[in-house]
Structures are given as structure tokens and as C-alpha cells.
Image (cartoon, rainbow, N blue to C red; front, side):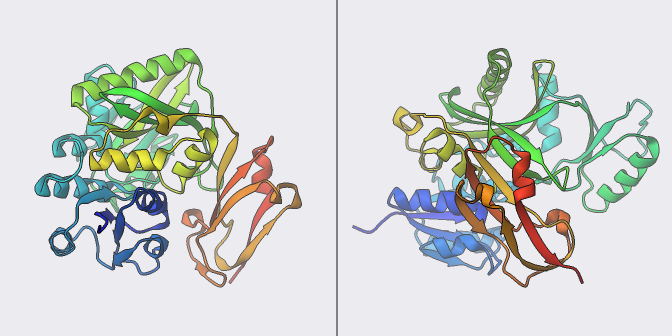
Length: 382
């Protein structure tokens, strides 16, 4: 019997957890992505070098390949295109398109939270000739439609604010300003069923060289008071928006035992975060995500948990130049569970603050800061 076909709108390394999970569930997996260097393509059963934003071309592939299910890759545009096409072809299990657009527009979602009493930092949407005298520094400048920390700035005075505004308006015309809350940044990755939280994973998110790009992530046990507030807010969101079953990933800042939701998505978090969840908790997270997207009900056995302390670490260079490899201190070599190289030896690095060299999963590390010292990216400066 021929396997049913799953089309993933993506093919980068970030999509590998879903590619492999769908294959493990018995599906023939096809990926889409215009970049030949996308590493996920080589894990798929078949791939097309097509931009998934070319909706008409994607439609042709769905029809030609007789696709049974659509799955989004790890990106907002991929998710929104997937929902649009899934509704059009009546395949899969996704929120209404207007709900998907609200959730994946940072300002619209913030405005929704503010209107419904859900804990989030205050914000103002930017418009030309707007009176900004009400702003109190420090303030966060944010694009509404970019991810991965792109275009985000924390500014502390009027001069920094004007520079940031000029820089951000060069890449997007949709900007808002957010109250800066200094607290603990965490990720809260949950699985909804019947608009209730079926499973939750909480983890610390830390940056290293680039203050807006997460490199280090590891499990955290939330205070019960914080988790109760957060759970109530999430289930309130799910009920008001009639969210379908499946994953929901949030970034949250905790200050004085109050969790403030700052970002959300219904596509998987990137850079092998699903593998962190699976290794730390022993759950079938990626398989559960695939099953939810295709419309199968997920059983409790997918989330039978045990606890291990695992760190997901993304190695980055500290300067531009030619990449010559990695050195790894003997202190952590035996603790590495997984290493996935993203950059080939000899590659030129022109934007070191946005370049990722390799992703690691590391166990039994007491000193998190040790990793930054123990894994060194070697760059030959131009």
C-alpha cells in the first residue's frame, strides 16, 4: 500500500524534527524551499527547489503529487501559507486563517491580549507623525512581522530611539513600541487539547553574542504560582480564539512572579528546540505535532515524561572572516549527545552576529557558562 504524502512548506535544518517524525509515522515526506543548501531537503523522501511563498506553484505541487496533508515549517510565512492552502484544499487541522494571522502578527496579538486582560507588556503601534512623548525609556522597538530577533532593539534614550526607528523602518513599515520589562526570559512550549493544556515544557532562553538571538536553552521548573497564572491566560486565549488541538509556543518574561507573554507561535520553535524537549522530558513531541496538524487525536502516551537536564546550544563566531572549524574542551566532549554542523569549513562569515555554526545537545552540565568557554569557533580574519 502506497504511503500517504505529507508536504512540508520548508526544508531547512529547523524542519528536520518534523520531517523525521512524519517519516516515523509512515508518511512519504516532500519538502519545499528555494535554497539548494537547505539541509532538511536531504532528509526528505523528495524535495522541490520552489519558494513556498509562490502560492500558485505550491498549488500545482499539491495537485500533481496528490498531497494528503500539509505541514508548516519553522517560520511564520510558512505557517500562514500552510493554513491558507490547508483551508483551500480541506486537508489538515488548523485554526481559522484570521486567527492564524492575528497570532502571528506581534502587534495584533499584543492588542488582543491588552483588550482581554491577558498579561503582556504595554505597547503602542507606530504611525507617522505620532506623538511619542508618552514613551517612557527604556522601551523595546519591535517589528510586527519578523522573527528571530530581527529588527528588535532595547533603547534607553531619545537619541538611541531615533537611530533604532530609522534602522527598523528600513526593513519594515510595521513597528510597535513595547514597555521594557527586565526579568527572566523563558520559553513555554505547550500542547493544547480541547483548548486545555495537555502538556507543558518550560525552559530558560539565554543569549550570548547577539542579545536578540537565543543560543542557549535548558529546562526550568516554574514556580507553581507563575505557572497557574500563565496556564489560565493561555487557556483563556485558546477559548476566545477557538484554537484547535496542537502545539503552541510562547516566549515569556517573568518579573516579581508575574509572567508577561511577549511572543507566540503555532509553528515549531527553531534550531532543534523540539529535540531539547524530547531529550529532556522523554516525550514524542514532534510526532504529536505532526499528528495534530494532520487531524489525528493525540493520546496521553505521547507525553509520558521523565526528567533529564539537557542544554541546547548554538555555537556562533565572534568575528567575521573564514570559518576554520570548532575546538571543544575535553571537559564537555563526553557530555555531547548530538552535534549538527550548519556551516562548512572554508565558508565566509560576513555577519557574525547572525551566523550559526553548529547546534549541540549537551547533558550533565552544572555550569552553563562553561559551554561558551568550552566550544570555540575558529575564524581566520580577513
